[in-house]
Image (cartoon, rainbow, N blue to C red; front, side, top):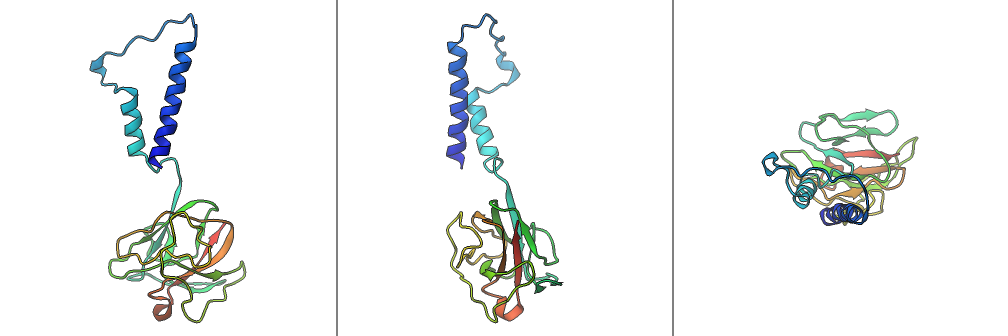
Length: 194
């Protein structure tokens, strides 16, 4: 992300510089800014903007994952869900909703347990046919993988860590569960990509 963004900014600056050199405008050049005003040279400004705003050009949606202290939720459509929620701060489990084709990061906000967010199969607008035992993967998928891909998983996330950047992918209804706590605690949710 950083090198591509930096190249784009430098390319734009170069085009503007060349356009200014090649024009035969009758307008006077703007006065030079004295060094005492603290204006950094253009390349330094660009580098600082790129460093400070590496993710500013993309929207990232966060999904929180937690078991310790998390309240379950009984969805009228999907039944009991536990351990997953929109954002990073809720303590009540919920059905997760994400916009299509958006970068998504899973955050293990638990202070005790490792977790995964693993694809278990397709749900529907009317319900989920939950597997009787965990049937997903626990191997981390490559960054950029769509979360509705068969065998998708964040892989194990230690307490206080986050996943790679994944893609929410195409619209759909997806069952998710934790490889460590699906069988023992029913840690699961439906992620609806709209």
